[in-house]
Length: 273
Length: 274
Ligand SMILES: Nc1ncnc2c1ncn2[C@@H]1O[C@H](COP(=O)(O)OP(=O)(O)O)[C@@H](O)[C@H]1O
Ligand SMILES: [Mg+2]
Image (cartoon, rainbow over all chains, first blue to last red; front, top):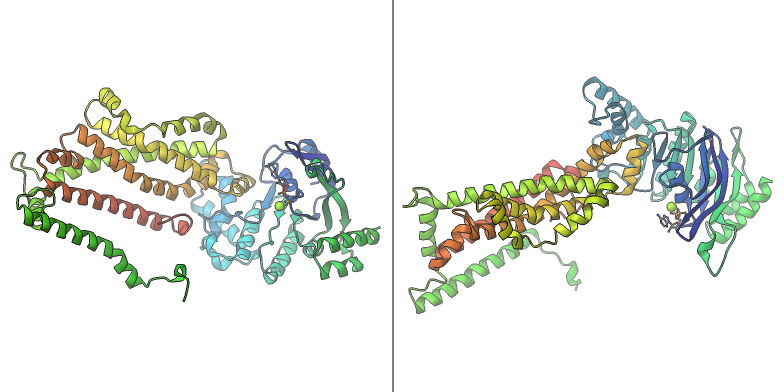
């Protein structure tokens, strides 16, 4: 399914958060979103979820207007609070199926339950959580909780997966495991992914397309007058082959400072051209 | 030398320190009582432990000469049944109103201001009205408790629902949940232990309203008894009754706390569990 974002603006009262955002994303792309903190990345994801509505412009999915509220075709993993603390790991993954099959109680019994359980177990196996099936989320490490959140979202087979700094709170080693996991799942399912990250290395490593959010216009007297937009839209992978941008990678890997990031972006533009 | 905030007592010391104030209070009472009784053997204000013991024997173990019933048990049974009715009804009302207000914006807009104002009405001031409307029987006592604590429970439950991370509500919607399914699978299971905590907090006020109602119009009950024997300056009865009420309240609180721990293992350490 393709997503088309047409000149979208988002304002809170007088404050412009996003302006003139236009974008077309095809089924199966993995977009990584980077940008300064507070520039509106989460707001952008929220509009894709339909948790928030654009104040101007339009978001189309397969040419149709976006639904007015969140739904099962768009899964999400937040940085925190994505799983339900009162449900065990297995119950967290089963919830989506139970809700679908049992409209009134939202609970299954008998053979339907067995089947849902089996499906949930195989999903948990693919994220490596079988051994903690009966634990409550609070007993899990941060990385495990995020894996659970991914499993929980994927069981609904959404066509779009939205990830908001999902690995931001994890240790580097665990983060590498999570990268392998998410890339595997992406390749297997052909799902469209939007992922916000503050780690530009991560953005390069995972994405097939890098979207940089930044303000184009600045008013020093009134910083809230202008919003951020997508300033760079860089293909990282075309037709299955990765584009390396060797010069940029050198800069990006040594430092995550904003000034360096800006120079990296300039280089990137040159190399991409 | 470590900072004082970093010095923790061992378990044994903790226990001893905890018991100490109780022992001191008993000692202080004993000394004061002895002093008064030494001055005037007929003093009624601070009776000795032995005369309190005799009184307990009379009202807790021997049938009353007038009615043939054991007073303490009769009083306890009627007070507890009133309390249970009042607290039970309040918990049910508070639960439904709180969850509905917490989840559905239209209900919140409609009911929340009313509940907030209602919770400001001093219930005791309504007692005369209750006696006029419901008579002097059981109903007005139960209604007093309900008026006193149901608005508090409703507000607390609403607040707990609103405190659930917004991410969870979004997440549930992305799993395809309807409003109803969100209520029964996400909100209610997480609110139950918090409801029991709200009930725990409202037990104190519930006892207060119960005793006030019993003191004014009743023919039995723990509060009735205390206020009845007050006329004879019967401290030998009043003091053990007060201790008994305190013990009952403490046990209820403990029971609820243990229930929360056993029934909702995931809730451990989530909120003030003290
Ligand atoms: N509901 C809201 N009302 C008003 N301002 C908001 C709201 N949500 C977000 N904002 C503001 O929008 C800006 C962008 O926020 P956000 O999208 O979370 O940034 P990012 O995720 O890029 O760090 C922030 O300045 C934030 O304060
Ligand atoms: Mg954000």
